[in-house]
Amino acid sequence: MNDLLKNIFRLVIFILVQVYILNKIPHLHRFIVPYLYYLFLLWLPFTMPRLTLLFVGFVTGLSLDYFTLTPGLHTAACVLVAYARPYIINILIAKEVTEFKYHEPSPRGMGWGPYMVYAFILTFLHHTYLILLQWLQFGTFLNFLIKIGATTAISMLLILTVELLFARILKYRTNTA
Amino acid sequence: MRNIFLFVQRYFVFLLFLVLQGFALWMLFKYNRFHRAAFLGVANEFTGSINTQVDKVDDYFHLREENKRVHRMNDSLLNLLRVNFNVPDTGQRLFIDSVRIDSITQYRRYLSRDAKVVYNSVNAENNYLQLNRGANHGIKDNMSVINSDGGVVGFIINVSPNFSQVLSLLHTKSRVPAVLKKTNTSGTIRWDAEDPRFLILEGVSRDVDVKKGDTVLTSQYAYNYPPGYIIGRIAGVNTNKATGFYELKVRSVVNFSSVQQVFIIENLQRTEQLQLERDTEKKLEQEKRN
Image (cartoon, rainbow over all chains, first blue to last red; front, side):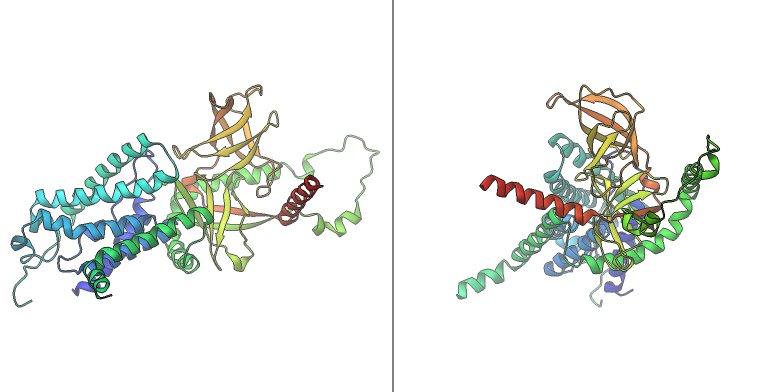
């Protein structure tokens, strides 16, 4: 499938799942807010230029924001994730190993260890910024800390589940492609 | 000049990051203050149309509860019928004030319209609902929203041509003037973002007799909300040590996760009331100057 088409399809799926399934699950506890939609940004190809990445992050956040009626909140967090992503990848992965073999970050291509660290750092970044922005308007500092921990744990669990359930079949990158 | 261009070229990604970040934060803080955002009208129409489709399926999961609510409402209306009451004095004659009936529209204070919830949330700290009625159906800002069995849900904060957004009682900025039914004492309902089943009633002084199970209604002093609609029942009596007032835990009658059919109630005299208030303030200021 065409790369652009595939990613647009993914974005739509992620936003719909976030809005109509994860945001609608019965209220368990105020600290338990499942977030998954930003996994879309984690799955973008290695080769995507940084500028495009920033714009894609912006659009992703904004489209969720218009559904949840918090214009700017998720956008700010997504732009941060999109900005930090190339740096994290550079630090975590030796370029020769993955970037030239695989198309996009995945546990198969990168190995489970580095991939989970990569996902954890960006998840933590996303949630900290998001909850910081919410906390500026309302709440106490202790709640702020607990909420970051709880939401990060749940998101990591969700990411793990998704990676196990929907293992992406990755094309081997060759010189001809 | 050349150096500036070089600088921009070199740090272009970082600068763009700052610009996008700044734009996002500007949107957020502007929205938090005024509840208006760029392209919200268009976006509202778009999300609304998707929400309507999803809602068609979602409806089936709440049918039983909705049916019960409607039945309760019907029951309370049935009890108001004139057949239920006997005239004790047979010599009594019934007068009909025809003047009042002729001009009844002038006396109307609240007008209700039906609407359907197409999207709602309870998991966030600031929750909103979306209704399938908008400016085309005469919906305006600040109209109140009542559940199908008469429980208060929130008020309209924003409208687009075909959809409207409701600021739910489950919103950290929601403040509803309320009274205790038994003693008619006023207070304010807010939400502490902890549990979507419970609200907080504050501003009731300690000398008022409050017990668990007491009913909390909307106040007659509110501009948005019609008086006498039920908000909830007292579930716990606490005292705020800082202020010396009660901090009453109220169990909401509305199950916010299953709100389906609602009424939008318009206060037809709202503008007049607000105008009067503004004029009074103006007069008081003039008095001060004199």
